[in-house]
Length: 108
Image 1: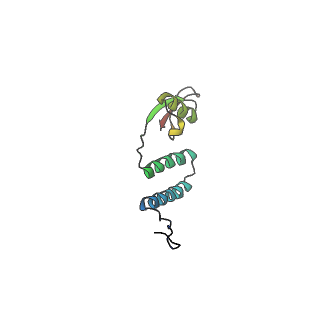
Image 2: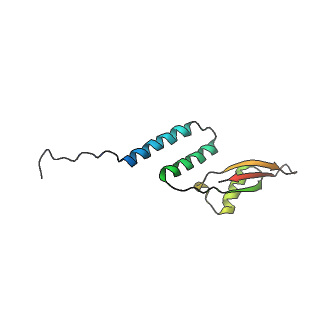
Image 3: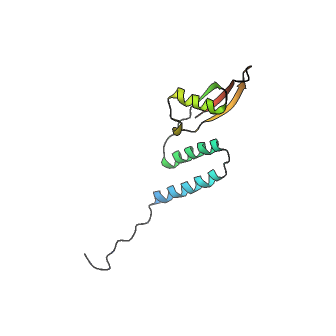
């Protein structure tokens, strides 16, 4: 069929696309309330995984390091992971007698 009145209209977004957009807006609103950069990265990673339906694996260990950032980078190296694949939180678990070394609980 041909004619001037035969035009294709844009199709509305499918319910799945609308749900995804709503979930992303909710994620963004939630992330605006998080001030800690490391927690924000972790929250975004978990929210994005939930939105896309992907599974997330939590891994943790105790490591001795000079600071939290070093503990995280050491964990990624020892686990053979890229730091872009996760969010690392390292919290001081105990301090050794030497002031240069602290044991950290590291979770990725």
